[in-house]
View (tube, each protein chain N blue to C red):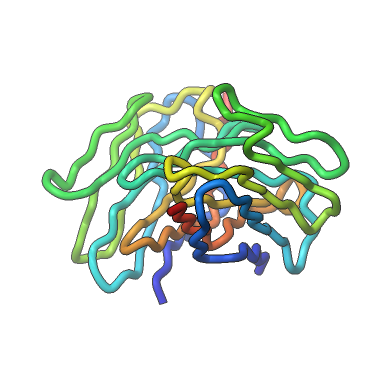
Length: 115
Length: 111
């Protein structure tokens, strides 16, 4: 079945540094990937929709300059948290869909802790 | 390994008919359980969640889900489906920093 690999699974970084999270579709091409953020015991919040070869579409309230999304190929999308602060600590997860008829596949998520 | 399974990839129901979407989980301990809906071109919207307590959970848009520990299930139901319910539905489980999603069930609503 379709597999989405998300790395790293856990990362701890210092305040003010940047962190890159990768979302890779291993055996299919994904023209669209979604990036989500989840706070403890709360629902997922869609951050942005990543489209291959074009700019990401950000949800209202999500800072484009802070959460940089790049979808340079049909198998890779990256989310970079720039100048991270402790309030950015969260669980980030991506998903990808294979074509219009395929099911959605989610990455395993990334636990970001900013100290 | 922890997992969430949605056995049905695609379901078609007639408008006004009842709906049940299946979800089974495999966790060492009872996870938090969620149902999400995703309309075409949009992200996930939380329908309902179960943490503990009453095993019948009411959500938005007229949906409900019942947690059955003996069956490791958390099936989503709606008594009467509307055409606007056509979407992709995801079941998810969360436990100890581990979030798992089912593959999704696509719901088609016939007029």
